[in-house]
Amino acid sequence: MGEAVIFLGPPGAGKGTQAARLAEELSFKKLSTGDILRDHVARGTPLGQQVKPIMDRGDLVPDELILALIREELADRVILDGFPRTLPQAEALDRLLAETGTRLLGVVLVEVPEEELVRRLLRRAELEGRSDDNEETIRRRLEVYREKTEPLVHYYEKKGVLRRVDGLGTPEEVYARIRAALGI
Ligand code: B4P
Image (cartoon, rainbow, N blue to C red):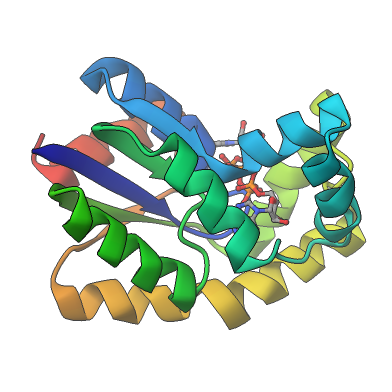
């Protein structure tokens, strides 16, 4: 029987950072839809060419493209970073987990105030130069998060699997809170 952990939270909350560490320590596969899409863009694949303008605007890539990626990449023990991001994605994931007999260990919601999110993403823009880390796109990504992804908080809360974690502080402090919240 497989096991999965989901990381949920606004852009810049530290999901990618925390998911990477948890995956390494638990020997789970980290599946980041953002990383997979950026890799396609960098390699100039047909999918990459299709999604680049969408990502540069800060909008979400269509659900059917994301679901095809997830079906290909899902593993036995997996940390999902940046997926699901819409209700149809969450419903499709539920079906996939049921089909593969995978148990959801928890959904970690990393909570960070908006001013701090913008500050972190602008700092990353200076360090890494990601094309979607400019102020206009960051505002759009936050808007899309509130509209499309935030409803998942209620969705998972109703299922009793949501674990809220304060994302302020050092990555080390946040990580300790996540381990405690998941009880693993
Ligand atoms: P993502 O790659 O998922 O981008 P993100 O939401 O910005 O999160 P990320 O993981 O990069 O940032 P993090 O919070 O870890 O998505 C990018 C785009 O891909 C989307 O806009 C969309 O177009 C597309 N996409 C991806 N998945 C999709 C899906 N399922 N459906 C549709 N479209 C999809 O970290 C941010 C920064 O904060 C980092 O620089 C980090 O170093 C720093 N940081 C982390 N923890 C910190 C801490 N405690 N203190 C200070 N800084 C910290």
